[in-house]
Length: 159
Image (cartoon, rainbow, N blue to C red; front, side):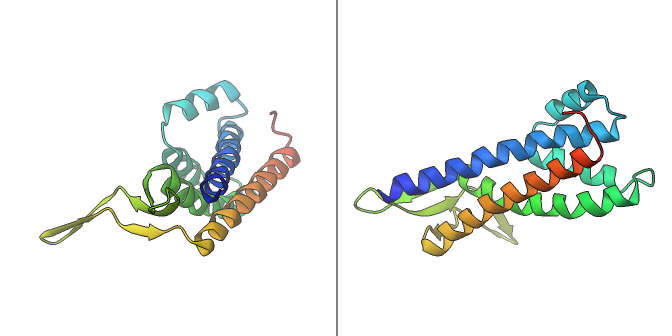
């Protein structure tokens, strides 16, 4: 039963994230003079969430970007990046199971260089505290979505 709870929670995280990332198309269209087709092509050309968020952050730093736009979107992008770390962890890890077949931990599939040694496969327990962290991230992503939608509606950006 615990596996179902964990998998549903990770599924919700992915679902709300998908909506969040698609909202970047409309933010990009703002920078591209309202040309949604150009924003879509740009969005699809950048093949990672990180690249898309980096582009928006860089566009926000341009002198031509209105100060109020920067003031609203820059903190939202920071929050998106923090949520993306949680999402990426659960989409790009290996799950470790106990003797009963229940998910008990994650193993990160990253290599870290430390001088003349390598470390990889960091194990982290998937305990109640970590489940609450995922739930909190789901709520945070939903709130980010609402704030982006409000920003877009206030500026009458066509969706």
